[in-house]
Length: 404
Image (cartoon, rainbow, N blue to C red; front, top):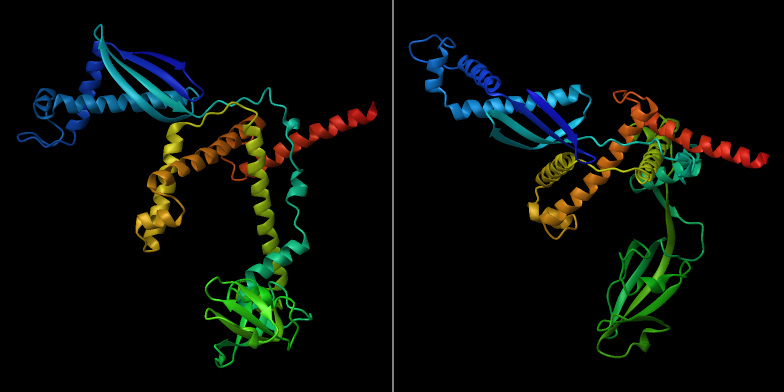
């Protein structure tokens, strides 16, 4: 057997392996024997039929195909043993020449990324410790935003004038052609369109117990404040009389009892969990940003086989989500904002390639820094080390400049 390996691109290898006639015949013989172990032939015990009998019952084309599969698998294993990180086999072309059986494989591998010429100090990014710092204000805001819709208590606000975003308690009625509808009370958030859309903007600035008349043109949807219902003229207009009863607000009174309702033992435990969630989100954002910047400094080609696998996984996940939601697939695709499935798949390809690019940079940095890629803390260690390398060099440069 002769083997030649040639790298033809950043991710592709061309591997040519040839077998002389006797080598190939031996592989066919061994495959007949392997298949024969599971074949029951009348007159022979299972797996005990001689080779010449097996050749009569098992088609040679089938045996040849099985040998070819075994050969490709064996070549890939040898490539792994030689240090190549194989992703997949793109093609396998077979031919016979001068009595030899020859296979030419195109194999995709993980890209070989070199950082030898990379100046990590050229990366412009905020220091990691500053980027992931979390203030008490951020924690309080996150808790309010997540819990207020469920546990906030509505009460009168300590303010005199109604503003956009306030909760308004109003008593109102409509006056059409001089006839009044029964008065009713309504509570709504100003500016969110929960009241009469044309009227809401004209309520801003009202004080408690103040009454306003809003003239609305139903044809043009225009509205204005008037001093009296008597000013209403025309067939397409009506008046909305609004009295502001109260300006209200919702406040979250955080307590251990509320914390326990959402699965935490105390307010302190809740705050610590929220702080860690915010910190982790910031860390992941910094990770993606710095890996993207590193990727821009090196030559990197993402293997197509990896992109295809990633797209397929994401596609199957979306299909599953659509099924869970009880939605038709085309309806689900439209809900996601895509014209059709083809447009969705193109976006999945884009996302998959970007995600894999950062992943490959991360793995390559781990090798570069001497960090075990099987370490469960590999990602954290690589990012921490990368931050040190970026800013250690900058500090040294600043010290040198300061000493001149």
